[in-house]
Length: 424
Ligand SMILES: *Cc1c(COP(=O)(O)O)cnc(C)c1O
Image (cartoon, rainbow, N blue to C red; front, side):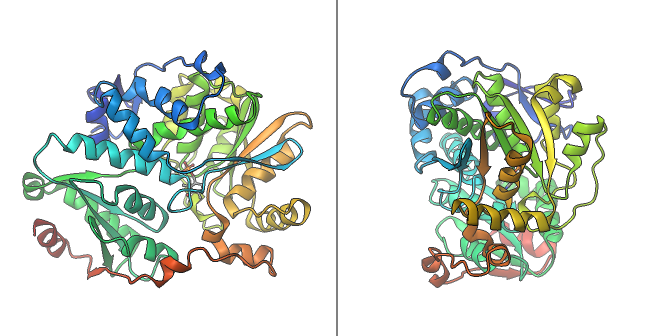
């Protein structure tokens, strides 16, 4: 399969090239030239998560990744469960948080890591993946790449500006994962990474790569759990409510629908950062500065996957709004929703999932079956859970991790030092 750039000003690439390059040079996003039709497969009996994963990925990845290798990668990527859990009548939670870092980003990060590891077997130079993180993404990438042969990962994070749990996830793995603690902001970290990619001397000596969230190998596997949810619900056509920030998850859901998963429709559920819900109402796309909220993984003012959403509907606003409606919830109502769902159903929501659940409560008709994506484990946001349900005691299954010793290298935001470090 070939991939083109949504800006149409860069050459098409193979799966392998697209994964390694991550971003086309015209600043668009890679997008598949054809959308495979798997509708017959999605009606078949007894399909497992791994069957769905393999059938979904094969048309994109083969022959760049041979079938036997792809099977192995799928088994390693989807090694944790992704259950659908009933919360109340006609409302279900698709729990995407059973992976190693307790959030759905594990799926994409693990697949990408294994693809790069495979491609690197034929190249002799070692690959260094550079990642700047403000918290969450770094953990998923670090864990995804852990002990993948031939790949070194260097994670840059702003000192004192990530949570203790997040810092432990970045700094305790060791092996091929190195954490650089930068005295500066997230923007300083991102600037160092960007400068490194542009530095001629560095790029002559090492294969630098990124684990950017818009990489096709992070995006496409996210479409798999929609088919898996449908399979677990006996193929009922459901309404998916998707807590969204950069809209990778929602764009992957639309891809799943276009590939033949029988999905009724989508709700784009956002916090106060409601660019897309506003677009759905008005037809005008107006990115705005980021507003900090309790559901901070969704604090995005200019969603990077928006062009993929448009592309999936051939840039037809009317078609897009037939399938997708918008919803937005503020912080106070998010807390109220968490409290309500706990008291009514005994189901603990994290602040992101809470917005998805609330969207179903308000936007779904009585007899429609709704599934919201529970994108993170509530323990990752225990401070917010505390505000919503003061007497709730969150079981601390992160205790082991918290006991592990942090290993990081401190560094300023001076590029010359950083470069010297990488060349060593
Ligand atoms: C990344 C993330 C989101 C938003 O997903 P997008 O694909 O960026 O829309 C929602 N919830 C959690 C917990 C996340 O980590």
